Image (cartoon, rainbow, N blue to C red):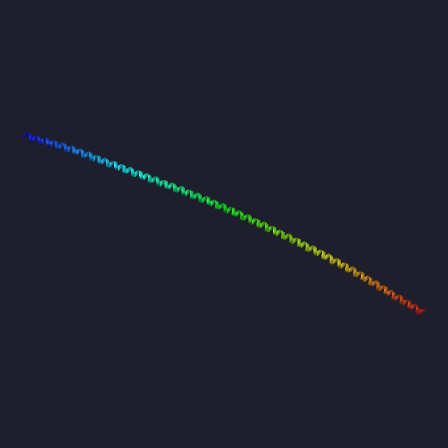
Length: 177
């Protein structure tokens, strides 16, 4: 009877000891599992943080690239605007040169026309003066010729009258004789 009790007690102690070991082992396994879960959660969190950092870096790089592209576009637009403005200024200068050349040519043509008009007016005046002189010379010559003819006629008349008187006096003298 005592042996039976001892054996039962011993077996009971062994079971209790085994159960305690099992519990400790289970606790240890649970702790390992919790630690593994924690490590996994930490790893997942680290991955998430790394992914966030990579995404943020990518967004920042994209923003920098977009800024650079926008700056390039603005610079290209500014260069194009400068080129267009330079072309417009050059076109304006060429147009101004053309207008000035046209004005100079028009002035030269007008001056030529005025000079031609002046030469023509001078020629007309000279012709008129020459015609006046010729007419005056002709009138004077006509007057001199008329005067000469009149003088000749008077002289001829006087001579004829004298001849008549001489003939009359001769006739009278004859008749008296």
